[in-house]
Amino acid sequence: SQTIHQWPATLVQPVGSPLSLECTVEGTSNPNLYWYRQAAGRGLQLLFYSVGIGQISSEVPQNLSASRPQDRQFILSSKKLLLSDSGFYLCAWTEASGFLNEQFFGPGTRLTVL
Amino acid sequence: AQSVSQHNHHVILSEAASLELGCNYSYGGTVNLFWYVQYPGQHLQLLLKYFSGDPLVKGIKGFEAEFIKSKFSFNLRKPSVQWSDTAEYFCAVTPYNNNDMRFGAGTRLTVKP
Image (cartoon, rainbow over all chains, first blue to last red; front, side):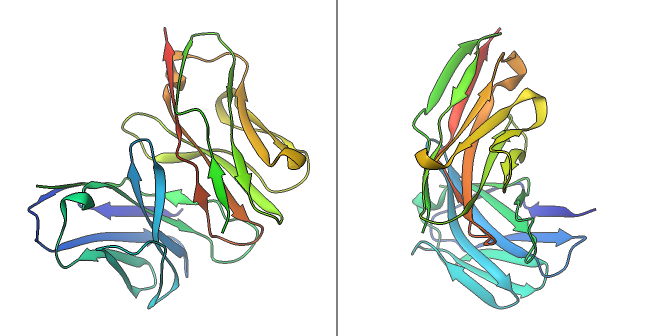
């Protein structure tokens, strides 16, 4: 069966510090991968998605970037965190092809920027 | 791109009350529709989904949703809520055979015992 992992689960970082959040998926090949930010009252905001290694689409211009160095690894990064980057970050995957395109979510990372 | 509106931000009900959460989407073509639920402290998980066929979809835990194409709606219903239904509910839509999923802002449901 497929599983999705995110780490760390929680993170407290000072303003201006770098960020690296990791997401890995097991039990599937060539998934589509997504990064979302969940903010209270604003639902899930799609940040990035990837349909393959090295292929990243950005939905919202911001202080963050994403990379996909391996088929089942998706990384969310920042060179210098802002206070406004605080939030709950969710990674998700879905089958790349076929009829089933339900998204499966990871446990999330709670980021606090101080 | 498609968008999703959930007009109820916070709904408070007593146990055994009936529930209906609104979801409207904007997209001109064929869509797939989803309801996700996030219980306190847990992952987002799928409640039910509509791809084609019968527009009345039944999901887990007694939930159902009806796709009304003419109204661009996919409202979630449950005849009698329980305290354990307290959670946040998200409606989502993707264009048919496309994985570009867009979520609504979510509706927080509080069920009082």
